[in-house]
Length: 114
Image 1 (cartoon, rainbow, N blue to C red):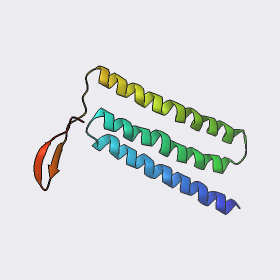
Image 2 (cartoon, rainbow, N blue to C red):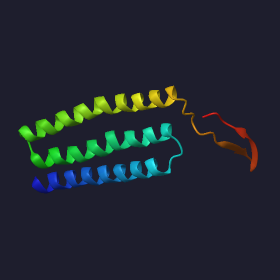
Image 3 (cartoon, helix red, strand yellow):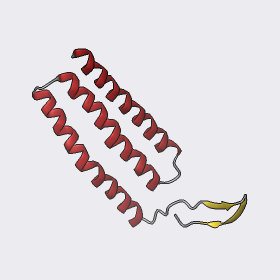
C-alpha cells in the first residue's frame, strides 16, 4: 500500500512540476498582461493543487493533511479573484491587449483588437 501511495504522490508532484514549468514559460513568453494572467492562473490552480495533493497523500490522514486541504481551498477561491482584480486594474489604466496579425493562405488580411 505504501508503494501505491508513493507512486500516486510522485505522479502528483510530477504533474504539478509540469504545470509549474508550463505556466512559468507562459509568463515569460506571452505578449501582454491579460495573457500572462492566464499563465499565472495555471500555476496557482494546477501546479499548486497537484503539489499539495501529493503532500496530502504523503502525510496520510492527519491534522497536517487537513491544513493542506484548507490551503488548497483558500487558493482556489483567491486565485481567480486576484487575477480578475489585476485584469480590471490593467483595463482601468488603459492597457490594451496586444494586437496580432491574421494570415490566410500566407497573406496578411488584417489585425485583431485582442
